Length: 277
Image (cartoon, rainbow, N blue to C red; front, side, top):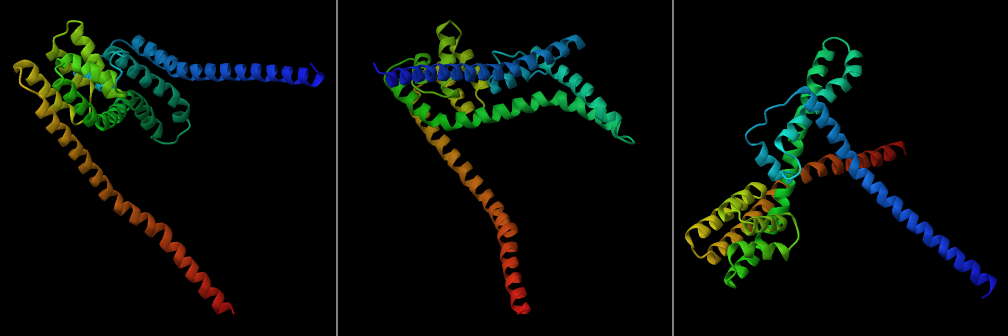
């Protein structure tokens, strides 16, 4: 082996070691970024628990389930986070409030804790809307697969699990959870009711109602589910057309505010140059 080949082999080993170190550093950075929000939430929860227990609203558990965090965050935990966020907002706004004139300090002292207290609710609503949109896209295809599974003779609980295992996405995961609950002994009616609470897609309530009726009375579901899949697709098409119709005036406004002044400036520049000649 020549000296050049030895140098090349050593350089290759050093480069491989550097790539491994870089990949490890990137992975550690990602894990650290994932840990930071958890630490912040744990800190806010600790602050809120020191303030004392807050009574959660009656629908908070359903909102947590719709946002997809019901298994990780309970109503008491979220209320503690809300109390800690309110306290943190009050403490953090004090330096700014003392530097403001007039009655603005009192306004900031009230608005900052209120914003901290309401911020988790806004986060839950935004997350639930995002999950609902994603589930609404999945729903027609999953219903078609469910019809095929039911026509093949599978019971409803197993059909939900088989469809959920053969698809990916938030709705498929929730179907797998419902099937697992039914397999572990939870009554199918209760598992379907919990499924409806966890899935904020617009087409899920009528689908779950049809599934519960079919499970309760033994009625055939294939034709009903096929009709509902077609209705979900039609409703989504209507929403897309409505969104496109609402976008047209916005596009016209952008054109009017951007293109028309630029054209007028070009015309004005041409007139000025002609006059100066």
